[in-house]
Image (spheres, rainbow, N blue to C red):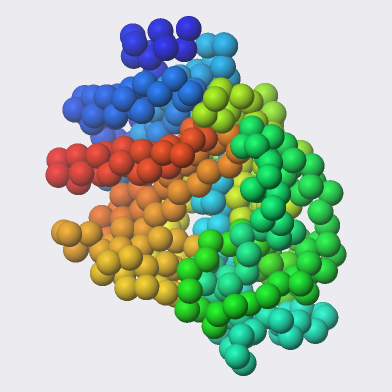
Length: 369
């Protein structure tokens, strides 16, 4: 039934602002999305664009398998690792507020002694926690055997059970067991445990919970009224169901992965967030885009943002995300005042790459209008 939807171009399209809908833009988006949804595992997708002070949103497919429930501007998705950019933004805010410095040794903000969080006298710095160069493992608890010995179908459910019962104290206890094998800041190693550690540091310096910090500095000021880092705060009736590449419904992301990938949001709310990140005259935004490793002329990392200079010499700043059952992609071009976001309720090995390709097609079209 969902495929019938797609064949007849059953979609929802909204535009806000003074500009009129551009049929050529519509056509490019429709064709790109329909091609993406030819993969039978994929269920629904929502697209948001901000350009020329106009906001456009598009919705296709369904919020759940087996039913024709078209996504809308109210539909809530897990945004995965785009959540890390929120954590990076909070770190930038803390630096501006003179609570911390990017070069601070993380152990300045931990109660226990952690002699293991350095290598050859070089400590892990706060900046290392937002660019995957801290040397910390992907997850805590660090259990590579779990990933090797558990089937891909079962792993999300096993991880969820473990992490749902994994406390802050458990995390800090396991942090003592970490072994750093290279100088922090010199080697890329993807790490979800790094933003989780940063979360606890931010909570300490502000004496507020991570959820309170998100609300205070991002959600409320930007009027992101339908965005949350807590499942219990999400309007479940608007939450899409997430699926893996076999069409199996997946568990929602554990709450204690909030700083690494646990934020829930909608297309309009994400466009508010990306519009905020277009304004590099804002010192928090500018700092969150500051390169921490790499060369922006080719590829660099900011505070959890990926960055490069395009062939036409425009700054491109983006992040993608994936959870057990959702995939996402967001990009901003600050000099051109363009932002694009795509949210979907299915996760597979090529989803994030293909979402990025759709965003590139959209950008190449609207930039040359």
